[in-house]
Amino acid sequence: MADDYLGRIGRLIRDARQHRGWTQLQLADALGTSQSAVNRIERGNQNISLEMIARIGEALDSEIVSLGYAGPMHLRVVGGRRLSGAIDVRTSKNACVALLCAALLNDGRTILRSVARIEEVYRILEVLSSIGVRARWVNGGDLEIVPPSRLELEAMDTEAARRTRSVIMFLGPLMHRFEQFTLPYAGGCDLGTRTVQPHMTALRQFGLEVAATQGFYHAQVDSSVSPTRAIVLTERGDTVTENALMAAARHDGVTVIRNASSNYMVQDLCFFLEELGVKVEGIGTTTLTVHGVPVIDRDVDYSPSEDPVEAMSLLAAAVVTGSELTIRRVPVEFLEIELAVLEEMGLDCERGLEYAAANGRTRLVDLTVRPSKLVSPIDKIHPMPFPGLNIDNVPFFAAIAASAQGSTLIHDWVYDNRAIYLTELTRLGASVKLLDPHRVLVEGPTRWRSAEMMCPPALRPAVVVLLAMLAAEGTSVLRNVYVINRGYEDLAERLNAVGARIETFRDI
Image 1 (cartoon, rainbow, N blue to C red):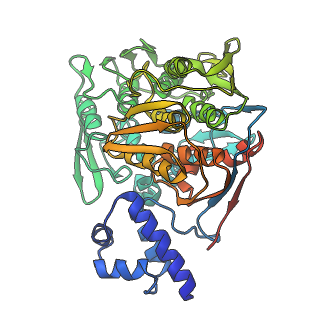
Image 2 (cartoon, helix red, strand yellow):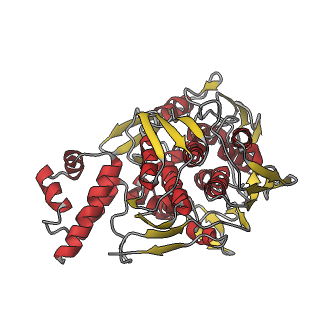
């Protein structure tokens, strides 16, 4: 391997490590090597095998190199262009991955319509296929899922499973099929963290006990255990609620779930469970009553609804570029607070008449956004459980606030350290001051400028950086955009169709 390539790979590894917030010693510990070895790798002074590159990429959750391609995908953005025309919102990433997990409840054939072709979906499909589920694309974007008579959990693709946190939602369905089973840690999370422990607390009431050792969850199921009272979730989380729903779906009895999330992906799962013959009362509220059925064997056909977070992304793209853009198929029920805040800030937008999504339940509108002179909101921007402002939409307000006149406080209280990634906007000309790991102060308006930078490892902040590049005069480069592909389907191509100029390229 030529010295030039070693140096370039070393710089990619260094940037990925720094964006993860790790020291060289932390990366060395994860790889089982020395800090001096990591230092030599990053300086391009040590030969490095493809196996080691893959291990580093897995440790940093960053695609350092792609086998079969010339290298990681990058984006070259020519900014300062106005967008125009209309763009459709695609189906929800979070709903699709939950429904793929829920298909394990069904002994019959499941068809999901217009599933997002994104990396997160591909990882779940790889896991499903490895355990014997027949999953194939039909009619372009539809998925047909047929389970085998017995799942082969011992053959599970653990590498694919570790690359998605969604695998935690296998717990609810699998506990109906096995008295004991093993799952890899979900996305590298440790048992006891806030994203995992609430799952265990809820599912324990259905007889599931989990021990975490050597990178795996070892599950034991006592089918004689049944909830004796309402299950109160200790966290009103989306995936926690979904796991409890799937556990209740094939529990022979009535289960009441309190402090449940009523967010969009949870509602989609409830609609799907109803197609499977499971009665769910209280959809859209924080108390769900599930009438479970012990055996589910139906051929079902279901259409996931559109993604409100993608809709917010497209809305933000119009705002920061000062464009007039029509965003079609917006699930307005899940954006009403965001729109109210934006209208308070001075956003000029027009909503069309409401119509039903393909699932027959979700309310959609076409939304036209026009160039607007925005001012900072009176109150801080902070997330709340639905029907409050969606946690995943908070980062987009950083770019919007940077385009507005005045100071905006953004408080991302849910995720540790995600606010730090929003300071990357300073490299594009914004004034974003980090107050603590959860709060940033944004001063606007911004004179955006082009830059070359590494893609943040968090999905929504990564897209925020891309949107700011659309607004910046000149040519910007965003390197290693795997994280964006995890959550968005053909985003660059779709933005190009309404006037953006984004080129994909690889350099290794």
